[in-house]
Structures are given as C-alpha cells and as structure tokens.
Image (cartoon, rainbow, N blue to C red; front, side, top):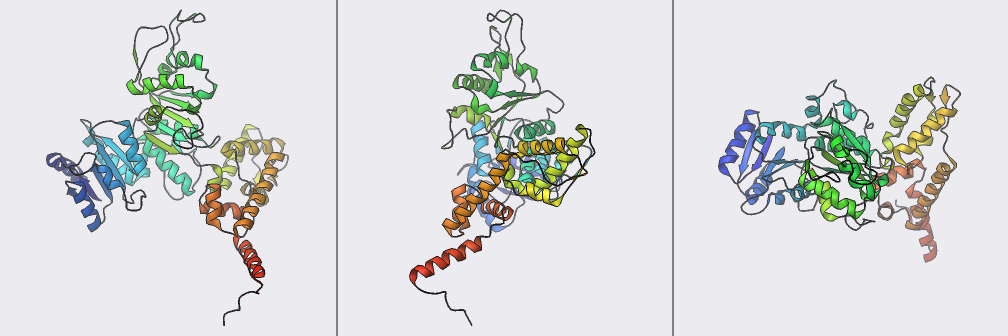
Length: 463
C-alpha cells in the first residue's frame, strides 16, 4: 500500500515510517502541508496519514478539495490532543479516521490503517463466524447481521458503524423515527472493546426533568422525601459498557447542562452525596431531528452537541433504500412466522410489488407492523397481499398524485423536483418508477402546450 505521511517532526516521522514499512507499506514523507499537496498531485496514494499541527497550515488543508467535496483518498488524521471539536471537524471534512498520539498508538496504527482500507477484513479478525451480509462488501461480524440490506446506503451505514466502533469517543446517531438507530447503537457496542459489558438504553423523551439527575446518577438514602434507599443510577448500571441516550434532543436545558458535565469530566455525583464518582461508560446518543444549525426545532446547547457529535452516524430512511425492501420483507416473514406458531408462507410477486410501491414514512418499524398484521390474519400458504391500513393505502395514492402534480408543473424537470422535495435524483427516480410515472411524458405535454401557445405546430422531422 502506498501511504503519504505528512509529519513535521522528522524523528517521529522516521519512527512511523519504520513501523509501517515493517508491515509492507511504501511510505512517502512530506514535512509541510504544501509539500504534501505537491506529492498528491504527482502520484497516486492509497492512504494519507496527516498530522494536525504543521509549520505552514493545519493538516485540515489536505482534507479540502478544490470543489469542496470530501477527499477521494482515505485520510487518517493524527492529533496530539483528544479534542472533541477538532475530531468532529476532521470527520465533517471527510477524514476516514482520527488517531490520538497516545503513548502506545504506534502499536495499533497498522491495524487502524487496515480497518480504514479493508473494514470487513479488520472486523473478521475479531469475530467468528465469518459471514458476508452484503453483496458489495463482506462485513464479517455477527453484530452486523441484523442490519439487513445491500443497498449503497446500507453499505455506507455498515462502514460508518465499523469505523465508529474502533474508538471510545461519544457518538451521535441521526435518523428518522423507526429507522433503526438503537440497532446501530447496539452494533457499535458489540463491535467495540466494551462488547459483553452492559448496554443501557434510556428514552430521554420519557424521562421527567425532575427525575433526570436521580435516574442517571443515582441517589443516596434520604436525599429527598421518597428516597427510602440508595439507588445506583443508570451511569453506574452501564459501568464499563455503553449508555445509549435515545431521543436526546427532548432533554430540557437543565438536564442538558447536567449531561454536559458528565461528558466533560467523566465524573458525576449521586443526588444527596458529597462524593464524586468516576464514570467508565461510552455515551451514544440518538435523535430523530436536527439538534444544531438552521434545522434545529428546539433549543439544544451547542457545547453539548459538539461533545456528543464527535462521531456522527446518519441512518437513512427506508424510502431511500427501496432496493432492500424485498430482502427485509422476506426476512421479517421468516422471523415472525415461527413466533406466531405458523408455517412460513411464501410471498407472491404482487405482494412484494405492493411493498415496493409504498413510501414507508414510518420506516422499518412500520414495515414490521404491516408484516405482523398480515401474518396474524394469514390462513393460507401464500401471502397474496399485505394488510395495509386505510392510512397506508391513502398515503400511496397521495404520494403518486403529488409526484404527478410536480411533474406536470415542472415539465418533468427531475432536478427541480428533487430540490423541492429535498431528496437526491436517484431517490426521486426510484419513487417515480414505483408509481409508474415517466418524466418524458410530462416533458412532451409541456412542449405541446408551448407550441400551441405560439401558434405553431411541432418542429419538422430531421431527414
């Protein structure tokens, strides 16, 4: 593997080069950011390993491309300090990973590099049995088996999950309700060094502000009127494991401040106690709405956001991964049928098309409900149709009508419609295909109206 190392400390750079060359890598050294950019322009590299502090610029400059897109060459970011904001900035800029220069980081450096270039192989070294769960990438860990799908969106999600599991930093998982955020959090836990330790999930939306501190940090006997005994709290319950804060955006500002103190110092004090306790947990948070920037709907502390979102994972809605619908549906039928003490029925082609023609605003959770409802009423060996609710059927009809209206008004301009809906062109095209809508039909209709309004017929045919 050809690696570009950008490190201004020459003696340390020699040590890094020696370690990597012992593992069969070809290492090219640059001392400054400018020299690194020059070498990038001269030849191809499989990986960039860049320090944050350089004489002429920060290492971030190598992550910036002329068109503002993430770099095509995988880049690992080296930093001397474990700064949440620096690490978050690097990930946002497109870094594949970041490594803190701890006393023994060189021992694990070759493995971290391998996990970036060949994430599935890195996972397989730590797991058995070896099993491929994607047609595109062989992710070889049982923790990923429940993340069904081989669409590009799911492949990227699995990559992000594997990468996040390689560190112990806080994670923020964003995605719509029912898309599987807790599934991702559990996979990160099982893939990481805290596997086998407690995984404690907390529904922040259901946690009253008055009880937040007591629930999380515990209390001593007599701390308040109803404290008839000592309570450990969820942080101690998750000791050496993972604390999963679901719907963290629903926390009141008062509770956010208390969570921030935990993340800053990894220390807490049970209610009514004078003793500080040390927290040994990895915090993973999830939200179904933006917490920061223009899209934020409720107040959320910026400093807490940056502490939580050191590592960011985006879970796609089911509508954007329609290529996985058949696989998910068949897997659910096979899974739920035995629980209902029934033979697993076959699924007719028309029933699968019915699944594909729906937009699934409730995501995977809604699909699960439809499959369970159908199986509960199933009395034959073949599912000929799934029992969609009246609201489901109405949604299908409304979506087709809305798309047809947008096609009519835009004259079949897919870019214009995609911008209006906030989706990519490929995602939009999949929706149009499911509803049997052909953009060219609407383009010809608009052209005909324009020609008639000009008082002329169609253009002459070319000979």
